[in-house]
Amino acid sequence: MKKKVLAVIFSAALALALLAGCGKDAAETVENTAEEASQTAQQDAADEETEEASEKTASGDEKDTQDNAGDIDVADKEAAENQDEENTAADAEEPGTDEVTIRVGSLKGPTSMGLVYLMDQAKKGEAANAYEFTMTASADELLPAMISGDLDIALIPANVASVLYMKTEGGISVIDINTLGVLYMVSGDSGIEEMSDLKGKTLYLTGKGTTPDYVLQYLLKENGLTAQDVTLEYKSEATEVAAVLAKTPDAIGVLPQPFVTAACAQNEELSVVMDLTEEWTALQGEGGSRLVTGVTVVRNSFLEEYGDAVDSFLEEHEASAAYANEHVEEAAELVAAAGIIEKAPVAVKAMPECNITYIDGEDMKAALSGYLEVLFGQDAASVGGGLPGDDFYYREQRAK
Image (cartoon, rainbow, N blue to C red; front, side):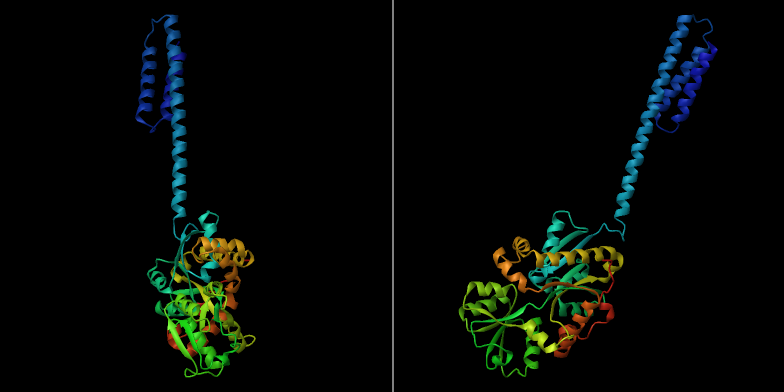
């Protein structure tokens, strides 16, 4: 009898030890059980039936207590797992990890054409990084966002990248070249075959002091033509130049792609009479500078904190540019869906002429630095008043 009572008291004490600090209700259950066992020990005159009833009650209470302890152990385990998940989520948000949304800005044109596949992958959740894309009609909308830190990466004209470098006192780096020359001379005048044929002609082009202007001025000068030999009429947008050509087919316009393809599609009298990239290359010769249209830049503060994410972007950008060149029809559908060109069939014709590319490392530096030197010789203001230093060129060798 006494052994049975002692067993009940021991069970209650063990349960109390298991439940220490686990909750008020569980502790009260153990305390009640211990009190019942103590009362049972004082009943010396109890008969066998009372003993059996007491033993049964004690056994039931012990089982209930152990069940409660098991429930609390499970609750503690779940709480620990939840805490681990919270800690993991907090770690993922810490600076320096891959869990960062890269804010990318680009222009509505060839630079974005080489980006559309990555845009589509990101939209489907299939990209390595998380991205937020912004596409604008003018670089003037991207520069303030880069300076303020509202964008991390931007695809902009090559000379504008140099200007931004100067304005931020070396606060940005160029990480790749995304587009080579996209400028063409369009006209219905079949008598134009070389630069010398432009003497005495009027040329329509966009923006005085912009890339088309600097490139054309350089080509004219190197071919022996002066400002008195030709008349340059500047328009604010490429669509205005295209409108002139539509009304006067024998006029001469300097247009970038995809406006060239669109203009020729609307008027069968028009055609490309000169590829300015070819003219540039002919002047530079083998090993000379290349006509660079668009580059990709990154804020250095972002690069320092998320270098791995930037390298991952470069890999995805390279693959996206390759897709645009190797899967033209599929990429053209994405270009049309993004609103870069209204119709996919026009995009199919334009994209092969857009010189979409991906160049990084030493090749990037050689091509871009030579191009900027030519512009600097034309007008120092075109590149921000000076040439960028070596720190302008991101030459991190990525594992292939």
